[in-house]
Image 1 (tube, rainbow, N blue to C red):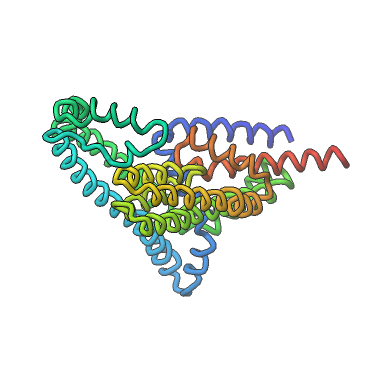
Image 2 (cartoon, rainbow, N blue to C red; image 1 turned 180 degrees about the horizontal axis):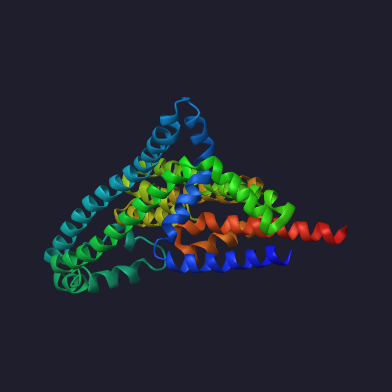
Length: 346
C-alpha cells in the first residue's frame, strides 16, 4: 500500500512539472481533450465504417481531424472577413464624421425625460466637425496599422495553438480505445472503485456542456438573428455571428442584441428596437432558465448553480476552454462528495 501511495504521489509531482513545462500550449491540449471526449461517439461510428487496418490507423483519424479543423476554421474565416468588411465601412463613416460631424438621430430628441438633454449634448459634442475630429483623433490609418501588427502576432500564436490542438486530437483519435482503457486503470489506481463513476460523470459533464452551451448558443444566435432580419437591423449577418459567439457564454447574448437595438434607435426605429429587446430577452430566458439547466445539469446530475460556477470560474482561469473544463471538475467533485456521504451513512 505504501509503495502504491508513493507511486501515486510521484506521478502527481511529475504531472505538475509537466503542466509547468507545457503551460504555454496547455489550452490547446485541453481543447484537444474536450473535442476528443465530445466527438468520440461520432468518431467511433466513423472509425468502424471500414475494417481496413490502414483506414483505422491513419485514414479515419486523419479525415475526421481534418473535418473538425474545417468545421472550426471555416466559420472563423467567414467571421474575420465580415469583421474586415465592417471595419472598412466603419473607417469610412468616421472619415465622413470628421468632415461633416455626426448628425443627430431624430429619435433622440423624442425620448421622454432625457431626450432634450441628450440632444443638447449631441449638438455640442458631436454635430460639429471639429468636435467629431477630436472624438475620433485616436482612430486613423496609423493607429489601425499598429493594431494590425499586434493582431498579426496574436493571430499567428492562435494558429500555432490550433495546429497543436489538431495534431493532438489526431493522436487521441488514433489511440482512442487504448487510451480509454489506460485512463480507467489510472482512475481505479487513484480513486479505487470510484474511478469508473468519476470518469463517467466527467464525460457526461463535457457532453452536457457542449450540448447546453455550444449547440444551444448557436441555435440562440440563429433565432435572435432571425429577429435582426425581421426588424431590419443593418449588417444583420454580422450581428447574428456576434450573438452566436456571445450566446455560448451564459448571459452573453444580451450584449449583442441590446447593441443592435441601440443601432435601430440611432436610425429612428424605436418600435423595432423595443421589439428586438423584448424578443431577445424572451429567447435568452427560455434557453438560460429552461433548456440549458436540463441539458447541462441533467446530463451530469449536478445542480445547475455549480455548473454555472464551474463555467464562470473556468472562463476566468483558462479562457474559453474553461467553459468545459470547469463543469468537468465540478462533476468530479460532486461524485467524490456523494461517495463520501454514502460511505458515512453506511
